[in-house]
Image 1 (cartoon, rainbow, N blue to C red):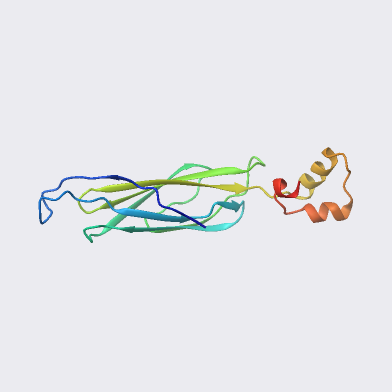
Image 2 (image 1 turned 90 degrees about the vertical axis):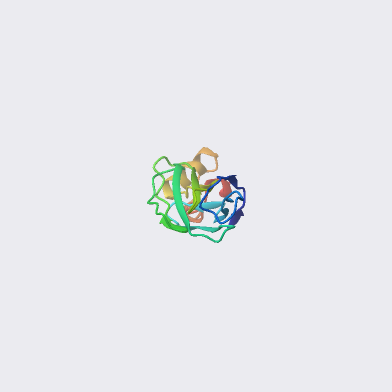
Length: 150
């Protein structure tokens, strides 16, 4: 998993703070996989802190990829849906973390869901390569990512 630490903070002045200092935006770090396979279970985990030590709220949004169930928690767990196109898919998400005074940080990240070959795809790929598959070659290629096999 790759930690992503790019943060886009926005600061808000709030009279409810103990002093005249600006309310500081939360700091976010998200741990995500860089590459997964369709059908694989994954977990996206966020770690956020408020410089003032206040409570935080989380808002996850999915920007691309097949729809998955999101929640308002620090981590998401879901299974990457099977490919409906037969090709790799890019999944993009956005996480916004807000403190009790309205200061927010937003972070976007993505990962690639690789499509595994089945027997038919492996057979077709070997045939297109002009080497004609044997049964053992087909079995050896099944379940392998096409780009890794070539």
